Length: 204
Image (tube, rainbow, N blue to C red):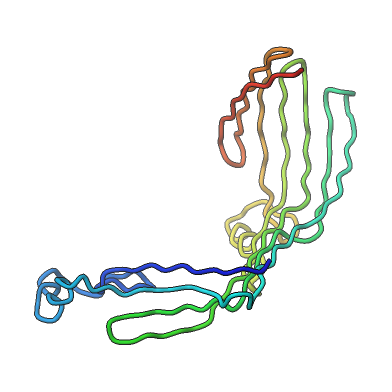
């Protein structure tokens, strides 16, 4: 995608705009001499990120996957396996970072290149009357630039269950859709992130 990007933020002069650390040791130093003048004049340091119009492309990548599923009990219990190829990735180079302080202005070039991989999704899906559940596991990892397996490597050191270089994460959710033409949905996500979903559906 072609386009333009610009983001600017400013901070009081006594806060480093890149690290956000406070550069003055105490309040007395802040109210002394030159610092007092800066304070009265609302002096700020700023950081600006931008790209030149139509100079760079934002690239977005999506994987493709294949799923095999089998009915253990017809219309009631199913097991499936999904294999993905590729990653969910985004990169943009040529971002200019302009740091402006009271005494100088400095411009450098930065960019980002990140990617997530999700793979080996194994799911057991059950459905009985108005109730359902989904139980499974999937592999996940994260990359930044040329540094691979950031999430998988960290979780491997913590003793997490692994499949290759990916950390295996459990999935568990269950719920019920009550009604026929007009249904009330109540769904509970337990793993990996807790959440509650509700809704009303009407079928013509």
